[in-house]
Image 1: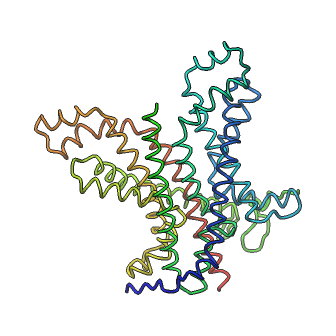
Image 2: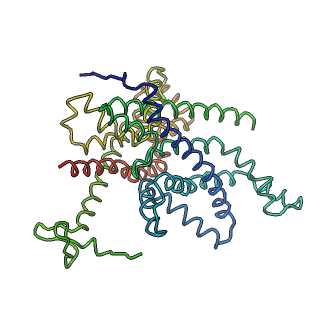
Image 3: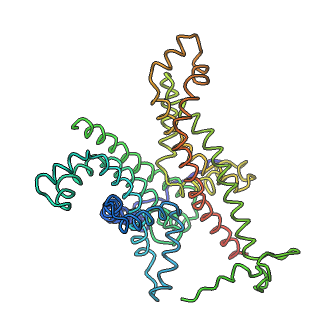
Length: 222
Length: 200
């Protein structure tokens, strides 16, 4: 019954089908991480600003995004944008934008916790030194918040990397799609899905091990 | 853009708009379809939550026992199901496991999805259960053992009642996540249905 045959997975096959998808998965993870953290930090600052015309839209955005499944957001964005702009965006571009917008909500919650973990005395000290609000945030609060939250931000990035497989819904060419194409072409779906799962596992597991080590080191420094 | 909300009131067979939006006498509108799909989502989510609570609690408890082998097993379980994307896990349950284990071919795909979603979530729940038990002071466990309780009794009467009360908030958010994640499962099953429709 266990007639598994992995011999068809040669270097040529992998570089022809899988590498392209793998690179897109990495690109998607990286773009969504950088864009999401920047946008998320802005959202967190809006929510903590205390001005209701800033707090309300930011809170509404974050809560909406966090209540909708990622697959739905991916699908809607992919289907709605051509209706609004009048021309299709392409699955890959659509995925990049969707993931950045979606992950911003999650990163913003992390950054909000990070900013709130900084004692208020630090902010008062910044003001007392004559800094403006912007300077206090940029030079005093945000660097510490980033360092405190670095492990959590990276853990969220690992989750994000796993979630990139969901672009399956709109047919973008990612790591999983690459493996699926190999499986279809060689009529060996069982083996390719197993290898795909193994690859995802190895990457996520080694990254999360690294994050754990980082966490230990950061907590020692503090 | 021109919206057309009447689509929900249409008959799924001939596309006629039904007068009260719900079909009658064997006729089905798209709204009926949506409601039955909603029922499926809820039943998949609830069953998966049951599976997840069962395995998650068990693995979380194993990871706090003094036996190294059990700890290792619980940790391996958690890392395995946490580090593979949900979509890939669902694919494994759909395509790979029935091919490797023939008796599974007779199992309806509904149950396979429930197992996939449930075991994926069990890894997260095991992490929360472990954190809940470890947040209790060590003296609780020692006191239980010193009173002559066996290890299972210590868990049953001393540790778990308090630990589960602590982790109720993260557990509720996890049960909401299960409902959101069930959409992933349906992304697969729907595409399967369309494939069947194309092949037929």
